[in-house]
Image (cartoon, rainbow, N blue to C red; front, top):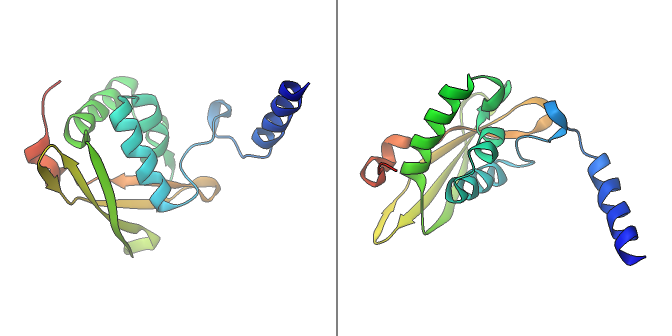
Length: 143
């Protein structure tokens, strides 16, 4: 009985969300959460999770690139942003309503501080627009 009630509660909560194409909500509710989801997807090597939080004011990247191009770009980002830990240093306003988050990304003994630019897209959801891959060049590694 408890399982059925729990399942119904979960389904009710999911029903209250505004889904994106395919029934899955994309982006994040806040700029910081978009960066957190992006970095979690990087470490999980989950290119599908990356593709729903990386995007622009039009929405997720998965809806804007061919599958081949999307996967190629995401694999490169995974190679550069794989990390042991990260810490959001600060969040500042950017141009055109974007938000800039400076994030210390550490792998081994090396720490870099890229600036993640986030932007609000459809349904008031936030997307990682730019992950500042140039700042991570020294950590990029082939898979």
